[in-house]
Amino acid sequence: MRQILITFILLTICVRGAVAEPDAAARFLMNDSVSLLDFGIYRLENDIRANRDRLTINHKPPDTVFVDYNWDENRIVIGLSYGVSGNPPQKEIRPEIKTVFETMRANFGIDPKGSTHRQAAASRLPEYFSHRAYVSKNRPPALENEIDRMTQLKVIYHVQNYSRYFECVSMLVDQGPDEMNCTDYLP
Image (tube, rainbow, N blue to C red; front, side, top):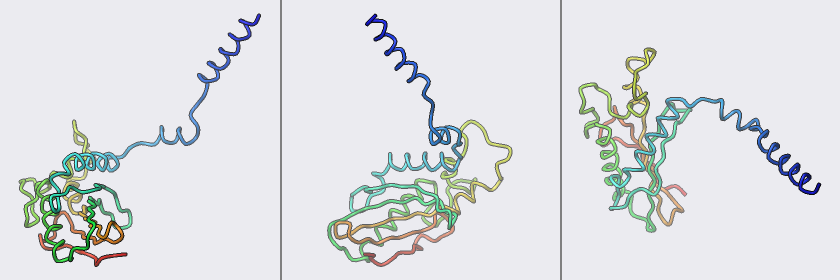
């Protein structure tokens, strides 16, 4: 009798575990699709992280790499974050950040003047935001160029043990090599 009772309890526990269902949050996540924007950001960020040693300032790779989409400005933002313990003058930092921007552009097939090396007029960046095996018939013809034009590069340079920072942004294309907007040191 005792063995039957133990068997019944174990079966009840097993059946109860097998009948459990995902809650509302899990069901939402299971049913919501991943867009090409989501997946492209994921692929791009992983590739930049894998190759971040090429993006150095003072022989140091970035502490953080991020790719985001800014809804308010309609920008794909490719960002890098560095940190130093001291407080170097901004005039020393700017040329290094400019070099990082040039390296990032070169990685996507854009020359220092801001134009592409390829005949297709678009950089390699839009490849992250496309299907691998086919091209959708609904894909807009100028989408690749639009992706290039909406992409912004950002470097956040932390100083004084990350208590302050200096930030520079530049567009991927359609901006001269010396054009970058930088803040002063921010608290």
